[in-house]
Image (tube, rainbow, N blue to C red; front, side, top):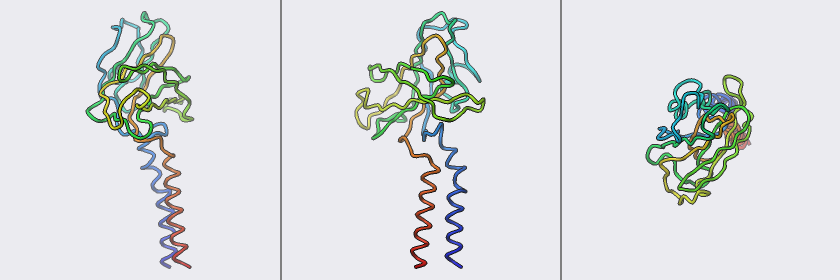
Length: 202
């Protein structure tokens, strides 16, 4: 009787935990913090240079939603703009794996990313997920080591370059790792629990 109860509990813990674990994921990535401020926009924007959904430019680039974004239309007077995003102290740190994830909406885009005075191009790819408006969600992951940031060092700001013609930017988040999806971890831990029960039964 005890063994049956433990088995049922293990199965329920696998499937019952999915909802809460999924809430911590954004686009399949374990996002632990977000850009906290829009510190600069260069060059200065004119009317119609940028389109935002769901709020102001500062709001949509520092919120915690992939459903809001900024887009530089083909009619913008600037050929490209750079958004300088600030991170609160010690939230963007060079860890062992990838450290930062950038999201965009629709077709995958290319951003220029400048960190630690080094500039590289980040190409986003389809995450296989959709926004609430059923738009394709894309992401690019960044390892701060590629920008010469020392292990364990914090970065206070990054520059994201958007080019006229449709490039969108939704969210910048710090990640502790590029995880195996939470459901896989939970399922695996549930199987370990069942294995333990089976061993005790013998």
